[in-house]
Length: 432
Image 1 (spheres, rainbow, N blue to C red):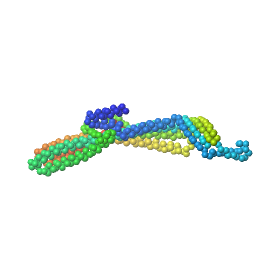
Image 2 (image 1 turned 180 degrees about the horizontal axis):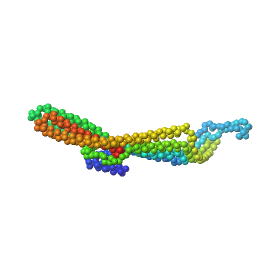
Image 3 (image 1 turned 45 degrees about the vertical axis):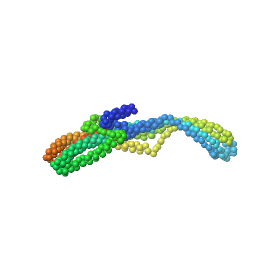
Image 4 (image 1 turned 30 degrees about the vertical axis):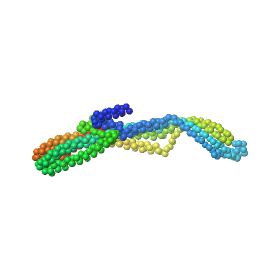
């Protein structure tokens, strides 16, 4: 609890200092404690612990009480030989046993002395705890992948918006100059209209990107447990251009760990089936007190009873049920072995492919950056010539569109590189 409090204080301080800017590390840490999927996976671990505690209680003594109040409206009778009461041989009499009112109280203690299934159940719960813990880590990796992916997309959209805002500002300056030239009758109105059309296209792109940005912000806030109404901003440049491959050497394959745990469970199931051939033994003790009343004769008496015992339960023949269970268990064991080999091959192949993709995207980013430098140079030269009147507005718009496409390519290359790095980290189970 204290650790969580200190962590929240640190986040609040970071927000206040940075003006509500969230870096990737902060978002991932917030998701660790606030994401509902991760919190539910942690609850699954706690639930399994409680189930194990509940199961272990079966090994403790069990004490039960039962009470019974009975009114015999007709006291049952039984036929006995008349000679029992000195009557003639060969004849019978009906004798009633009991009284109208009987109050029965029983207290029984039961203690399991030996039950092989209890030990099997505890072993299975212990392995299940491992499975739940692995599932929790897999859930955390999936959530962190979603957080990081959303974060990088939000950065890319923000960077693209910044480009467009700058382009609109530059276009406004050109349109202003063009309108002045129109008033001086140096150019016709059509030339200014062409620039205005291009500006409207930029405004439309800006509005579309802003809507996407709003959706990504909402999604990111949900993933990290923030109030959807709160504001959030992410730094644009430092993490878009900075690699996230801080620790790419540590390889964790939770999928293989899950299969290993399932194989252990398969072994325990086989042991459990074998243990079912053995008998179970329990001790029990009971105390009984019956209070009998017959108001007509003013008769009242209490009768005590107590006994101790050992109970042995042993299934001598179950119709070959356990025999067939063992056959199924053996087939499942073979299936798990095959799955382990297959998934290992798939994971290694995916890790190698995503690692190669990182190099491809690095090269693509370098090319896109060079194209942007060249397109900026071409646009500035075209703009200068346009102001000198040596090129038409069509040439200027073409140069502007080429620069916009180069800007989009750079942003796309950035996000593809970050996503490639993210996929590689996910493939080796190392998103931190």
